[in-house]
Structure formats: C-alpha cells, structure tokens
Length: 398
Ligand code: PXP
Image 1 (cartoon, protein in one colour):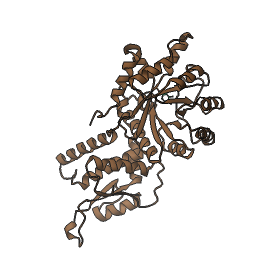
Image 2: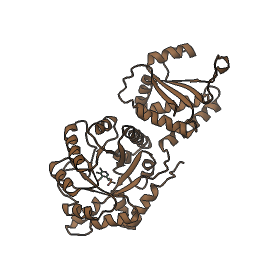
Image 3: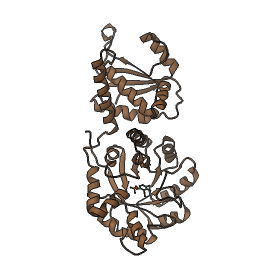
Image 4: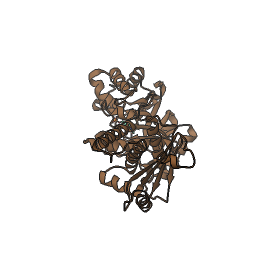
C-alpha cells in the first residue's frame, strides 16, 4: 500500500511506534476504500512545524497537524498529479506528545486521532467553514476511530480454556472431583481449540497427575502455563506440551497478577526458551501490553506473546477501559509487526471479550474464570459454546 511515514528529523519520543502507526494508518485507508491511494505522513518536531505553520498559514508557533492535499492547486502545476495521490499530513510529534499526556492517552493513540483528522481534511472536510461542517467532521472522526479500534476480522480467534478452576474446586475438598481432565474433554467437544493449565510451584490446583493425563487425552492443543523455574522446566521437557506460556509466579497471589518483566529477566527467560526450542516446544511470554516488553520478547526468541488483558478488564470507567483497550490494540499490532504471534488473556468475560476478539492480529484468547463460573449455572458445554459465539465475526459496531 502506498502509504509513507516519513521522519522529518530525529524524533526521540520513546513511545513512538512507527510499525504500529503504519499498520493502523493502512487500516484507516482500507476502511475508507482508499487502499490504492498515495498518502504521506510526515512526522516532525515543533520547530519544523512552526516553520510550516508560519509559511502556509501565517500563524506563529507549532500546531498539531497540517494537511496538504495533492490536488489543491493542481491546475497551476506544470505536471499532472496522479489521480490516486491524496497528499501529505504533517504532524508535530512533540505537540502530539504533550496533548497525549494531557488527555491521559498514549502517543500512538493521539497520533492516530491526528491522522484521522488530517485525512478528513485531505478528503475535503473543513471544520473552520461552518458549525455544521465542524459537527459533521467530528462525527465522522469518532466513527472512524471507533471502527479502527474494533476493526472486524474475517477469521475467528481461537478459544483456549483454562481449567485450573475446576482443580481449585476439587482441592477445596481434597478429593478427586471435579476432574480437570474430564473438563478439558468437554471443553474440546464444545469447540475449544486448546486447553490451558498452570502447574504452579505450590501445586495449589493443577497437579502433576493432571498434566500427565491431559498430555495423553487433549486432542487440540495443550498449553502449559508455568514459571521459568528449574523444576517445572524439567517437567515440561518430560511431558511435552504443545506450547508453554511463561508467567511470573508469586506464592501469595490469588492469580497471576502482572506480566513477566522480560526486560529485567532477559537472561533467565532466554535460557528457558532455548531449552524449549531444543525440545521443539514453542514459548509464549505473558506480558503487559508495553512496547519495551514486546521488543524484549522478540529479542529473547519467544514465538508468542500473550498480552495481559487484566487492566482492561478491571477498568471501572469507560475512559480507563478505552485507554487500556487501545494499549492492547497497539501492542497486538506492534507485536505482530515484530514477527511475534499474539495471544491475549486474563479477566476476559462474556462482556469484555468481543472487543479484544475483534483485533485481527490476536490468534487466541485464554479464558478460565468466566467460563468455569458460568458453567456452574449453565453447564460447561453451554458456557464454552456461549463464549465461542462471542468470538465469531461480525463484531458489534460493524
Ligand atoms: N492467561 C494467563 C497467563 C493466566 O495466568 C490466566 C489465569 O490463570 C489466564 C490467562 C486466564 O485468566 P482468567 O481465569 O481470568 O480468564
């Protein structure tokens, strides 16, 4: 797609992710059926933007975005502009960064808003002409941003069910019922494409016996969640799950609380991944949706990242939820652009899942608590089928 992102000068904003920005800008062009058009997005600093602002608008100081349509004075030009040339959008990253901080948004989120705004100008909208036009342009901007954030996919994300909670109920009585191995079979029959268990160092729910039997019975894909600790690494190598997901583990926590700090535990994680690589077991790293963790995950040789959706799921205001969702959307795009495969999970339920499932770069969602809780009332088969229905396109808002 002829979309160019040009860095006018050295831009040092650490949160700037060109790969993710490009993906989302390309998606924006597709939404407007402009995928065959030429568009340049030029990122610059305040001083450079001030020069453009003064030269072309006679205004002092920087502004956030300026659009230069290719066809504006086309007749006066001594050459013909190709029909698919949209023009240039100039953005000051420094101004965008200040605005993002003030609004509590990420830099990329603000840049996307400015790209949408700039593109609508290129397409002939002008909020300065009249109040009606301003309101129409604002509506159009919101619609496009909503669509961008919930971009529909044609393929369905896979659903992997975490059956730890079945074992937790069993352990409440210390008997053999209910059996997570049986639960896994029911989940698979209902359509789940994977089974996840976390073999904790303290064995508070899933036991070695469960893992052994699951390895023999799971027909889809067995994903073993574990800490990068010597004892469990040996068990994983011996059992041979289809993949493992490395998670941080603290004795006192009720469930996995935060993502792995791959940046700080680079060596240890790299070593564990190397051992798994030799055994042919792909490794996923459970990380918070942060660019530095994604980059580190690629550096240590992970095949997948699983983006921690906990902060999105736990958000109590719409603003906070939107902010956290945008971080997941951006991180999923960044991770895919880095060549990583992307899963997501933690805290997903029957309300907050569709929005995440609509993100096209997410391959699989790992869900436990919500499905097992619902199963108590409607049965496990039904609970899995209901969750699967939420993963099926089209998604709300499309
Ligand atoms: N992904 C990981 C890495 C987890 O640790 C857990 C919780 O065990 C989940 C997904 C599933 O979270 P939930 O039970 O909240 O659906």
